[in-house]
Amino acid sequence: MSKCIVTGCERKIRSNSLCHKHDELRRRTGGTELKCHYDNPYMSPEDRFWARVKQGKPDECWPWQGSCKNGYGTFRVDGKDILVHRFAYALKYGQLPDDMMGTHKCNNRSCCNWDHIKPGNNLSNMQDRKTAGHYATGEANNKCKFSDAIVNEVRVASGTYVEIGRRFSMSATQVANIKNKRQRIATTLDREPVTP
Image (cartoon, rainbow, N blue to C red):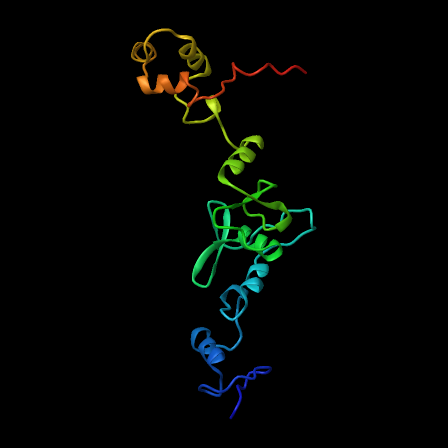
């Protein structure tokens, strides 16, 4: 049985003196060599992953150089898009459970350094985000409808929720949420002043 004519290939001939792999490449690209690492369906997922990561020192971020969705790197494995930071974590520490997230200690969504990724849940991820200052609350949030001063006035106002709502042009439900601290949990007026 004859072997493929491409140097180093030991596969059986399919047609044109080439194996199936190299004949498909010739048909798609016009040659038997792949032009890009990410076009290579014959590379392992790990090799394709590392070909798109810009590795640096162990304590630095390793940014993803491939496609991204909402800032998070993604790539396809077995016909399914996966997040690259979860893949990186799995390479060193093992697969994350489906109910856990891979959260970035460095707050860099495209980072693939497995030492910068820790398992967590949505709550811990949101707390980390808030601690890092990436989560705008109160007046800093561009969707804020009421100033901190109005929120504090609503909290101390007396009367029914409907009466207070009419006074401040808001719904009774919103008044209840503010008074019960389900919305606008803390305002800048609630916080202690920072002394230098």
